[in-house]
Amino acid sequence: MKKSILTGAGLLLILTGCTNVTTEQQSGEQTMESEEMQHEENMDMNHGDMEGMEEHMDHDNIPPLQASKGTQELVIPPLLEKQNDSDFDYEVVAQEGTTQFFDGSLTKTYGYNGNLLGPTLQLKEGETVKVKVRNELNEPTTFHWHGLEVPGTEDGGPSDVIQPGESKIVTLKADQPAATLWYHPHPHKSTAEQVFKGLAGMLYVEETDEEAPALPHTYGEDDIPLIFQDRLFDENHQLDYENLMNSDGTIGDVSLVNGTLNPKLTVTKPLMRFRILNGANARNYTFRLSNGATFTQIASDGGLLHEPVEMDEITLSPSERAEILIDFSAMDSDEPIAITDEEGNALLPFDLDIDGGTGEMESISWTDDTTFLTEKEKSLPVTKEIELFGMMDKVTINGKKFDPERIDLRQKKGVPEVWEVYNKPDEMGGMIHPFHIHGTQFKIISRDGREPAPNEQGLKDSVLIEPGERVRLLVTFPEEGIYMYHCHILEHEDNGMMGQVEVY
Image (cartoon, rainbow, N blue to C red; front, top):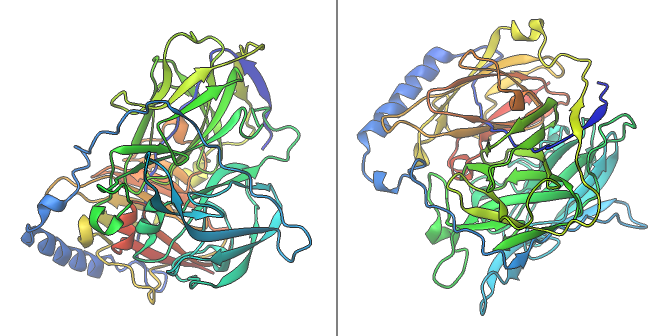
């Protein structure tokens, strides 16, 4: 793909939504009849068990986030440094720590190579590195490279557990387009808690093509990672997950950006690139600018969009990413400017301190000599059907819960197939399920028969699926192995809303 960039005025960006999909297949063939029977049994169980419904998280009436007071400069995660004179290139250590969110108290947290979250790992397109991963927690964990197309043996799914005090070396090859990815733990039944306590970090695949778009690329200056998360704290300012969690998705009222409470960002460049990650356990974010300005989305989960899209808001479900550009040069520095949520709460206020340069552009675009979806791809038959259903601990995919000893689907390496993912409503209406597939970057073919929005015409590994919605995905696996597909509401994942596909 050849891309060239032109400059443009008033450019602003926004991000896209995602969804999750699952299906079951035995010996390469669908067994939908038996699955339907199992699903009906599951429906009867759900309909008959109304006790405890008050614990169901009403995702249409979630607790509002507290607005940032703008008292702390945003923490920028450090870049992970290469090792010298070693048999590996990088080391990532999961460890316990403490973080001071509130005056006068320390909160127990988890982090990678530190107390909270982790450093950003940068890889070049085509680069192969060895990463030593070490577990210094007092519980098992895994290291999952979310969005990276690596063999199943290196993916870090729930079968790849590392016990406390143990380590291993994994080989990661960035054999895919430049993109904003991330890494996090994936141990079955404890992923939600470990992420909630702080385990997450960014992973960049960087462009090497000299003809690539000349986008802002100075890390920490005009190229900023933004990890948005919500958290609940107990009366002692602790992340007491056991007592605070909700089995339908733990949603808090405290907003953190890059682990910073009450953040602000001092903007020194007229044109800024923001790489946004929804790193929450369950909250969906709709991002806007407080002054009503637009912004331009340039990339989704797996890399640049087919073309840049100007937007005034963007919705991301858990695990989705988007890259946006904001042109601050034409904005009034005396007017409050912030990234807000849909309620207008300022999540990240900006202080403008732009010295020189205008950032004004006549246009921003790139040419793409390929077709996002060919007619042949659009006409491929559905070969895998996934049904997402349920809530709380009764969530299923195709009527079943995760079994590590069971292979649910099989697919040949390098062969594109169409997965149709259906989010079946329950008697309470159902809830959004963000659907994630390991080991691939897929394309959204359609939503309920309609072509995807312009900001979804790019590579994705997660997709937001509304109740009652059917989404078709073009899925191709470039490597062999066993991969997970699951809902990325982490509590649903831990409750068994997950399956396995074997790529051969």
